Amino acid sequence: MTKAELAKFKKILEEKQAELARVVRNREAIAIEKSADAIDEVQHAAERELAIRNLDRESQMLRLVRLALRRIEEGTYGTCLECEEPINKKRLQAVPWAPYCLKCQEEFDKKQDQSALEELLVNAA
Image (cartoon, rainbow, N blue to C red; front, side, top):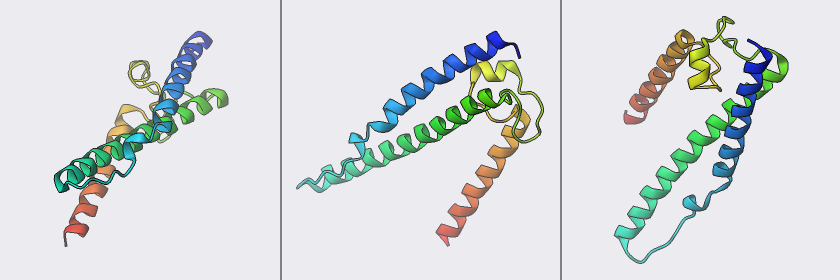
């Protein structure tokens, strides 16, 4: 990867990091509100749960962006963390914080899905 390409990815990642940091700091949506009406309480709880899930997703993405910026500094950006093969540039253009090549990402996602399913089954029992 050329220095110009790395600089471009670094700029994109730094902008994304700033955006996500602002979003993660805004936690007003997860405040617990009391209401005299039970239906309002249920609605507030559902909205809070959605806000918590969004905050969790944004926090995870922020970690990936910071990891990608660290890999740029270390000179390992664009290399899959699993198989150590180059990550396709089209993939990096679409998801600049991608830590894995497409093949390894698919394997990682399958393991995550399997773990989630097993947890659901354990909790259902």
